[in-house]
Structure formats: structure tokens, C-alpha cells
Length: 107
Image (cartoon, rainbow, N blue to C red; front, top):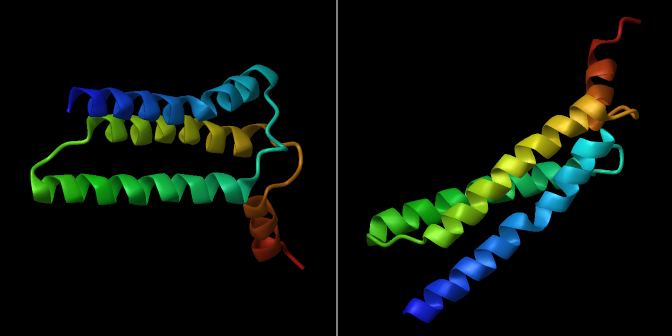
């Protein structure tokens, strides 16, 4: 069981830090035009729903998967920043900005 926990933690840490280089790069350059808005939102909601599924399942079974919690929560923090950066630093209009302009433009 100890080996399984170690493997779980290693995998979760590696998955959790996958977005870190992108977040650091975006922070340093203050550029986010190349970040796909759709990708960020699908990734965000995938993390939210999967975390909810795991938490509920673990609660119902009385077990805990702390490596998974760490992975999903850390990813959500990074995603909050990347989504913030997408709408703050983007030079090109985002999909939400285009929709807002279309809906609220005075003709």
C-alpha cells in the first residue's frame, strides 16, 4: 500500500505542475493571446467536475485520495490565473469580448 501511495503522489505532483511553466511564462511576458480560451474553460470545468466526482465518491465510500485532491486543487489555482491572464493581457479580442460587443453594440 505504501508503494501505491508513493506512485499516486508522484503522478499527482507531475500532473499538478504541468501548467506551471505556462503560468510562469504568461506572468513574465504578460502575453496570453496564444492561450486558447475554449481550452482553458474546458480544462477548468473538467477539473471542477472531476474533483467533485472524486470528493463525493470518497465521502460515500469513506476513503480519501489526497494525491488527487492536491492535483485538482493546484491545477484549479493555476487555471484561475491563466483565465484571469487571458482576459487581462489579451491584445486580440476574446470570444467573450466579441459576444459582448455583438450583443450590446448600438446600431
